[in-house]
Image (cartoon, rainbow, N blue to C red; front, side):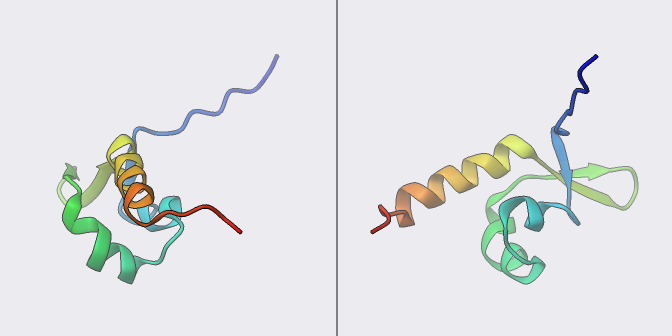
Amino acid sequence: MAEIFLMPRIVRIKDAPTYLGTNINYFNQYIRPYLTELRIGEKGVGFDRLDLDRWVDDYVKEHGRHAN
């Protein structure tokens, strides 16, 4: 039987920068202000993976270019 890998819909704050390929400082300064935070329990924070993907799509539209 094949193994199934499920990507979680909610990405925790500690994993969000890695998911986007950046570091926590860049994430907090330039990306996080544009996202909706989701409270997880009393202290946990997460982000909707689709919201993270939309941020990347917008970033590519604005700053992307074809490779040489």
